[in-house]
Amino acid sequence: MRVTVSRKAHFNAAHRLYRPDWDDARNREVFGKCSNPLYHGHNYELIVSVTGPIDPETGFVVDMAELKVLIRDKVEDALDHKNLNEEVPEFRELNPTAENIAVVIWDKLRPHIPASCDLEITLYETPRNFVSYRGAE
Image (cartoon, rainbow, N blue to C red; front, side, top):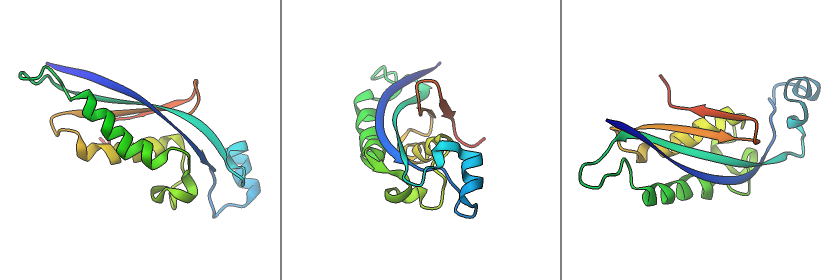
């Protein structure tokens, strides 16, 4: 039997969507107002879901208190109130789209999740726009 447990978190961050090899007109055409050279921000909502077997001793898939600390240490501390393009090394060469942010978060957390469990990241950039990532298949 496999069960999914989830924890919500949030962080606030600024970013700019653009390709440096494109001119401003092309960036505006593709990324719209998200290509503002002075950046813009989001209040990101994050759901981290772990699916795996229930431990017969604890009754847990994972200890939610440990998951809370892991998310704080690996995600919130790294991304909250940051300019993603300028302050987060993973985005120096990677466009910080919601899709890429979700993959980066998954990469930060996956090494700390038991191998017997699956990890899914759901990231809300706005209340209506969100992405999910379960790892490369």
